[in-house]
Image (cartoon, rainbow, N blue to C red; front, side, top):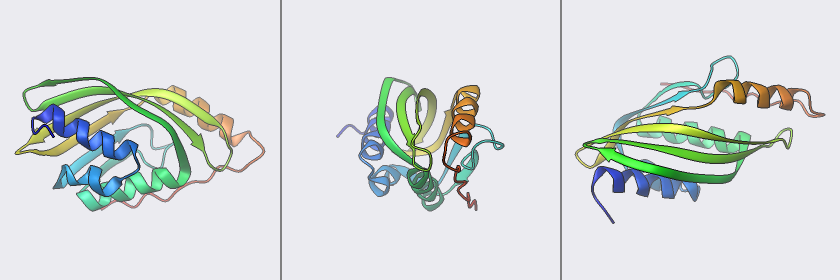
Length: 149
């Protein structure tokens, strides 16, 4: 396993893609910050998640609301301790059965062999349109409570 910043991020993303949140989070510092930029009006996951356990909780809540059909990191590049990548993903909304595919941009900061900060940026208008579609399906959209510490 590579121990450079790019290798650490790749290892964490690989574990996440397999649904192994504990292993993915082991690459994060205990007080890491994960920021998911979506839109608080449409996503209960939007905002800042502090600490490894809270980040795992966020990932678990996303997994309860969506089936991850595809999660493909690409264009991973490092500049010093900063790693940038795109993640192509496809999610099935469990409550409605609707499927969304999109690309998120992620920026990671690695210090002393651990991820200390991750910022994920999503296409907010695409998410808004997708969740509107879910709202208008035959099923009622579930809102997940996002507990933040």
